[in-house]
Structure formats: C-alpha cells, structure tokens
Length: 475
RNA sequence: GCUCCUAUCGUCUAGAGGCCUAGGACGGAGCCCUCUCAAGGCUUAAACCCGGGUUCGAAUCCCGGUAGGAGCGCCA
Image (tube, rainbow, N blue to C red):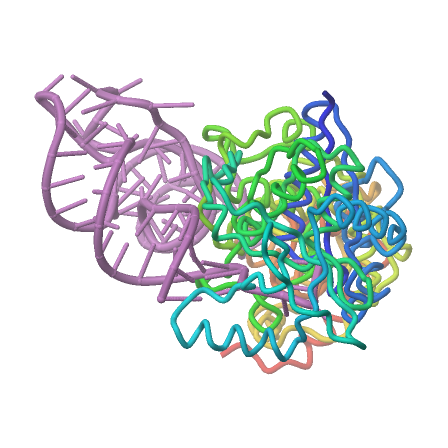
C-alpha cells in the first residue's frame, strides 16, 4: 500500500515553526516511500477561521517548497459527506442524540471538578439496553454524540512514542455534530483520513489524547486505523512553550530574518531527528534518510544560534544563482535597486563567508548598489583622519591610470601605495574600506573595488579625500 | 484533580546491557593564520534528574520518586 500523509492545519493564524516541522516530517515521509502528501484545511470552526490565515499557510508552504500532491482540501466543502456519515452512524446506533444544554453540561463539569474527578460527559442521553431515556425537551436542537465503546482498552502503537494504552472507560462520548448540525474536528478528521486513504497521521503530540477516540470511531465506521506519529512540540530557547505572545514566529518571518527555505528545513529536520552525526542535508538526503526511528519523543528548544549556523552553511555551499533571487528580494527590501551594481552572484561569492543570513548580506552589500550617505563615525575618525589624505591621493593616482580594472591589478596598486608610503597593508586598506563602504568591514579590498567598479571607486575615494583634508590632524 | 507523555554537556543530539575514560554539532574559552570582518586549522571546558531493583556488568531493562509538558469544549 502506497504511503499517503497529510498536513492539516486549522486556519486561525500564520504557519508557525512547529507546524512547519510537522508538515516537513509528513512531506518527507511520504516522499521517502514514493507516496503522496496532501494539504487539508481544517476550517470547520467558522468563527475562528479566516481567509488571511488560509493565504498565510499557503504562502508559507509555498516558500518552504512543501508542495501538496493534490489540490488543497477544505473541510467546509465536505459537509454533505459528513452529514451522510452521521446519518449512517445514527441509524447504526454508533451515535446518538444528546439534548443536554450547554448550561447543564457546564454544571455537570463543575460538579465533577469539585469532586476532583476528570470532567467528562456522564452519558445521560446515551442509549443502553434496558435504559429509559428522558423525554426529549421541545425546542432544543440536539447534538450528536459518538457512542464510545466502554469495554477493554485502545492500544496506540505510535511510531515515535511507542505503545500507549488507554482504558476505554476513560473515553467519554464526544460530540460529533453541533446543535446546528456542523460537524466537529475529531469526527471530520476521522472521515477525511479514511476517505483520503491516509496511511500515516503525523501531527503534534497535543493530539495523542484524541487518538484513542478517533481510533474507536474508525472502527465503528468499519475502517482500519492508520499509523500514527505524534511529534513533540518546539519550545522557545528558554524552554517555555512558544505562543503568539512568546516568540512564536511565522515561517515568513524567518524569511525576513534572512533564512533560506532549505536552511530552515535543514534546521527543523534536525530538531528532534538525527541521522548519526550528520548535521547538513540536502532535500534529497532528507527524503532518502528521514525515518521515525530516530525522532525524539521529547520536546526540543529552538536555538537561534544553531539556526544561524545552518543558514551560514547553506549560503556557503549553495550555487549562488540559487539564492540570488532571494538576495534580490532582501536588497529591494533594504531600499536599493540591485540593477545599479555588480551581478548578485558575484557579490554573494564575496560576501557569503562573512554573512550568516541573506538579511545580513544585504545590509553589508548595500554600498555596492547605493551611494554611501554617511561614514560610520568611529571608523571615519580612525581611518579617514588627516593622515589618510596622502594615502587616498596616492590611491586615486594609481587607480586612475590602471590599465585593467581587475582584482590582481587593483591588489598591485594597493600594495605599491603601501610600500611607497612605508605603511602596512592594513593602513591602506582600511581607509579605502571606509571610503567606499562607509565602514571598516568589507570583503577583501581588491575584490571589493573590482566589484564596485572604477567610476564609483574613484568618486568615493575623492569624497573621502575631501573628508580627510577637513579632518583634524590625528592626535 | 484525573488521563497521557517526556527526562544524556547551556542547546540539538549519538547511544538498542559490555565497543562509554559517554561521541558529534551549535554556542563558549584559548592559540595559529590574517588588509577589516569573517572563514579556516588546532586545542580545551562542559552531561547520563534522584533512589531502589534485575544482571557478572546499566546511560541503556523494571519499579518508585522528582521535575517539566499535553489533554480533559457544541475549539482545532
């Protein structure tokens, strides 16, 4: 049987990092076995579901490159099917009407908690042989409850957590259709997973306690339960649960931070999963090697430092052309036009070993595409003081006459100036850096000038010379 | 409260009874290299939650604590 997995978010917010990891695991597992992966929108709660959230989820999945093998499915478009199944269950006696009001149920739960019991439905409308049910009150629309078998136990052989056994009597009769007829989550999931031939349900471990009831429903419907893998959640770096108030970020925010999709995926796949000592995986390797045997059952903390390291490894390893579009996106976001300067690929090659993210790279590369509007104060004070004037003049002189604007030739001029003035290379290179980039950090100076081009270089050196001439003599 | 889950360096993890003097990676510290920042190379500190068992032998198996977490809706 071919593997079919699904990612089934409810559209109540952006695609967060934990959801992205669950989606990734589902995707990888399906691909590993040549199966299918599908995306299903669980939007039965119309109060909380929004179109913006649906769009945000699609956007996040698309950016990560986790493509569904089918057209997206919306539960709200399957109401007819759910209604038919509920009718069947009512007819078969595996579900029943319950007329208890919300107030009645609230009171029941309050009493149970006062008695230090687990709050649960007490079965007051559950039909049993020989039991006399109350007369249905008029004017009340009943909910439909699943009649959960109360004998024996339900065994869940979880691919990550191992065997978990639940006593059936712990499972109360959950509502599968509201008073207005709208079906509920636990029921829709069961019907959908059966209808769609889902073989492996991979989801957050906040669902383990739902699983035995879902298994019971599947059995009541005559189906065979799929395999389950409950993935632990991701914690913040302080070990606290990630929430909207506390550090929970949508995947698109990681884009804004300068991560590439592959880097995020690589970081996430190693969060809770391992393959020996291997840290870096291409997408193909992830697919080839991912398995649940090595997924940790314990929650893991999101470590930004390690994520940055993974990001850096990707920037250094990947073909520059692959990340050029994303780099372009960041430069434009920084307000510069990438057309006004050297080819992005060339800049990437020079910058990537000193940048952990594309955001950082864009910030450090702006000067290639826009004028330097202000010098870093400290750097200018140090390197563009009066004593820099002769250095800059000599450089302008040497570079103006340069026959070929190539890195080795530029390198030659810089060395010659240093020698001629009896200075160390750094004493020449640093004033140039500040002059052309505005600050004292840049790629190797010959590469920097080569990429910047002769015209811009000379103009910026000249401006710096003016600045140095006006500067107070070095103390 | 009840049910369920989890527990190895600060963090992510390797570990399937002897290969463990507990390995790798991030981060930290130090040194080397160096035109800046990096990158790179080398070195280094750092962990089996506690207590009982089982066994010739336990990080690994069992039991009990402890500490975290999840769930207990006409939410998903």
